[in-house]
Amino acid sequence: MFGKLGAPEIILILVVIILLFGAKKLPDMARSLGKSARILKSEAKAMKEDGKSSAPADPPNNPDEQPAQRVIQAAPGDVTSSRPVTEPTDTTKR
Image (cartoon, rainbow, N blue to C red):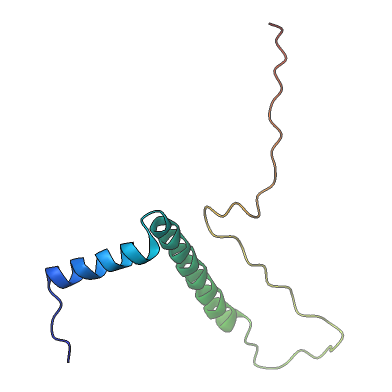
């Protein structure tokens, strides 16, 4: 239907994208896309591990027990969950 895309067509598409979004916005968009891909990958891995390890043959006998909470760890480079660090004070007199 469309045929093969050559170099001129790809360059034209890139120019249109840069004109639409602006050169300053593109790195932020790429960064957020990469972060989303990492989160999706880690969630898929966690779901796969949950399926293997927590699929008991029989349901638990005690209905009062609550299932263990699943902890989602932050992706590498994610600073939203980091703790503040106090800066060292300068104890020398000037």
